[in-house]
Image (cartoon, rainbow, N blue to C red; front, side):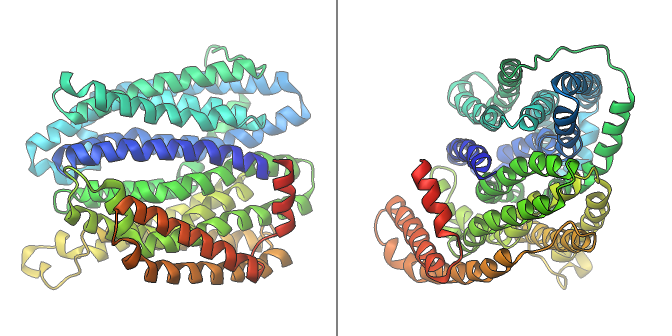
Length: 519
């Protein structure tokens, strides 16, 4: 499993680095203004579906069944199931795409109601959303092919595909901007073009893996009906974090101009550890758990889940504390240039610190959800996810009641502005993971072993030591060139955490030695 985690994590890291370059260009060119707000809202809709399908509902329903068929009935049965799935999904997603293009103004009334007060901004958002919306169909079909590759334990191509998204986005920003009305238009065309290339790459990858995909006539066979039934609750259960972000977006559109952009830049920073750790571990864990559960080896499944939690938290705990303690220097060094002023960096760092509080919970959701999905249970995460959505919505209202209430009483109510949606997401995600962990434990699907119980508090102590070192090191390290200061700060953090974890016994030294010898 660790090798698969490293494969997915390595490609995800490459994608995130390119994503930072893309976001640095966006920040320098348009900052946190109305064009940025319009593009980020337009891009949110197809990416919400991407995360729900690529990292949530579809993977939760498709991968366990595909892996099971591959193990028990052979490649032909698995190939037939995948072809039926891509046929039904193509028909369904094509209809959604056409409907979205027609009714985009009405969709934006729901997703960004606060933009209605500024007609030019609302019209630009609708225009950009119509350009990016075909990405929904392209990337969801790519998610299906990624699921097939993951089920065959071929993780590289699926993990590498997002790299193309960022490459095309960068190329569009640099090359298309002089020929389109705004920078937002250039970015939007880059999104849709990248979807075509990603899908083409994955079609080639599954063909090379010995499973060429042909699209038969769509039919609701018993296998497809089962797949769709399992997907429906998974749309809420596995995608609770993404749906929470949609709620955040609705609330943010009602707050002062630039709030959407501030939340976007902050979220992009926290997506680095989330993608490299959480998604990588969850992607590698699901097919393994599915085979172990299908084979009746419950002890191995519990052991795999414990090690996945251990791997995830070993990296996530220090990342969360580092993003909280060093939020401002991170935002200023990465994005502070051009239209992205020092005041913008200060505001965005407050959102980043609020997101970072919930980072361990969001990562653990990616790890714990496969424990239910591997057993064909998408209902449990759905029920907890629906309650989580309600918690997130209530917290958003509470934290920014001063902006949403009538003017006569607004002054006496809370107004956290750009901090509110991020903090609401973090607290709701924490509720979600605690509730899911309790439910899995009661069913016997999550039992912490002695190794995890021994190492977890030691990881926490090492991470706290690292956070204290970062707090005191910031001022002296940033007296010189800021990039040098950030690199030095990261070096100090990694060094302190590594030494503290080693001294406290927070990880298996023998495992690291074996990995080094293999390398």
